[in-house]
Image 1 (cartoon, rainbow, N blue to C red):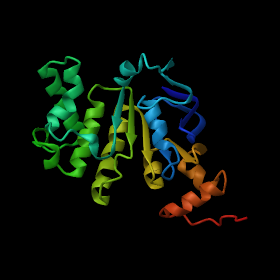
Image 2 (cartoon, rainbow, N blue to C red; image 1 turned 90 degrees about the vertical axis):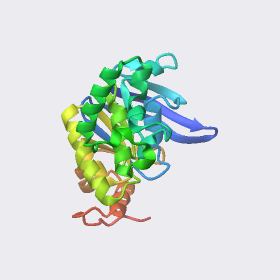
Image 3 (cartoon, helix red, strand yellow; image 1 turned 180 degrees about the horizontal axis):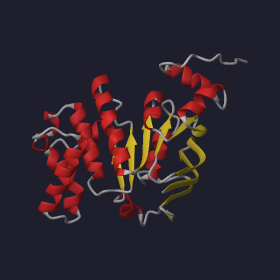
Image 4 (cartoon, rainbow, N blue to C red; image 1 turned 30 degrees about the horizontal axis):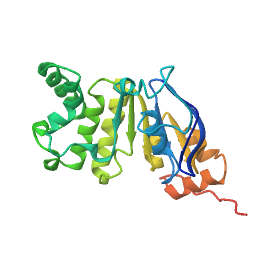
Length: 251
């Protein structure tokens, strides 16, 4: 569904992503994880065309993304950022339906889709008619997910969508999100810094460090057969329940 072929990114003289190749399996969830500055959010932004790679090619459903087709391709991708990224001067209803109205959907079609998504994301009754400042963090995040799903995209990209939520709200949203992913069978890419969350969602977990992929596979692979000491240190730093710290070799 999405493929990165030797994609790299530099800002000036600083290379934030080394040449990276990655294939995303249709209908599965791929989690990008790693410390701050490792390149995971850069990969996500390159996938959706918010930034152009310095080198390499991104393919969506076999078609290379270019400046000429990126706006059309984006309509097939849903994008969720932390806290929903909502416009404060628009109601929840207007935030979620913004692009659909721009594309010419009639009012009935927009409202039917809104009600469908509100039920799917378990948004409380009446929340669609409030403004973002009148909603909780969890409700704003559910709206961000609804907006990303509004056009029924093939791919859903989420950049640390639960990073700012308190543990109980985060737990509930994690449970609901996994149910949504499984029921809709979307191709999903989720960025997180939390290994437990990566294991909860990911069919494939991709651990990055220093702007490159260090290891990919399942969470169990990384715990039991780490590729190198960096993977072991990252696992140990997460303090995952039931995982005993492994001794890390030092030079």
